[in-house]
Length: 513
Ligand SMILES: [Zn+2]
Image (cartoon, rainbow, N blue to C red; front, top):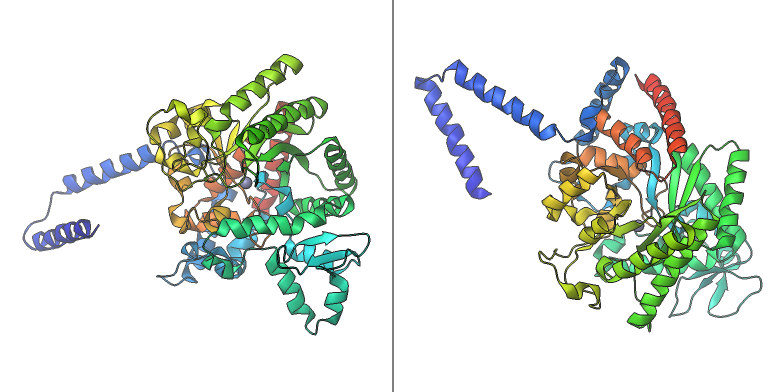
């Protein structure tokens, strides 16, 4: 890098020295410029937004967008860009930009990667918890901060929240304290293992969502907010081991939303954890995953309008590799085809990793226990015909494979804020999605677990990406459109959804032109 710098400086000084006694011929400079323009055209060739021609009104909005990006950049110190800072430290700064309001109003199509347990606004959740007489917080050492709803007071170490808050002198800081139990904040940046705290947060809220009415209400308010406040029209939720009762609940929620005038479409991806639970043997783990895959196949037959496929999630570098689970997935897909005559589509969380990829095939990959010191999951996701891939950020390490993803149309569900907060991309300007997008790989922007990251919706993911990757209006339009194109909606519904999005886009452009 330093050598490159010296080399460049030498050339520039040489040119400056030469200009005094020698003027290069105009044609050489013109030729350089022509070659440069051709190279730019060539390297842009695969960018998906290259297919988008902007109308006159859109060009006016594009000028506005560039001005808003420049304004947001002007607010940042040269050595301290927001993209390189831990998201909770700069969240409020993004929020205060005009760009944020613009992107919030933008019709963003679909969210394809989100976990329902972590999708709703946490402040609203705290408000709900503190407003009910039957919510409790665990003040014991072992499960400190666990929250739950009980019909009767369970006694120590559980404390009734309403009573505890009633005695608190400062109600605001009491609520902030509850909030800090269920979100990752600036102080968590210093933790040696962010995934440990991340996991604890899910354990802390789980007890609340065991109460079906509370869970249903949380999902209802959250989905409503995604449509009304964030301009989302379609969502695909990674639901943890849903059963028939869960699907009845999703149907009730959809009915309520539609009755309420909230126009949203919804799909569910059955998900189980790739983590081996404490005390679980490898055999028991395999049996659990296989049971889940078979259950997903059975539930798909019973709920073809809602359930679209299956996934395994959780911390990838510690959990089971895709190769270890591949034989189970193939077995379950065979089961689904033979029993129901239908495919069992996979929507795999893969490539959310900091480990190196291994460059040779190893038979033992199928049987070797985990965790391992390498991660080849993007290879297995490709071979397993995953419909889309959750994250997929390690794909940048294998350029040849990224071409295969592009040519097959395999889309990645990119989650920029999540990737930074969970330690994969500390400086979002260097997010692998930039290289993958430039190479024509289809991507969508998603929030993953926004509640845990302190927000609701996907606007923050758009605003960080827009600034860090210098996204144009054509890029934004292409991302929103692709999110619907890459959704699991059926052909007709997808066509209608895209038409609906185009109408919303026209209204949005007319508003800002
Ligand atoms: Zn996820």
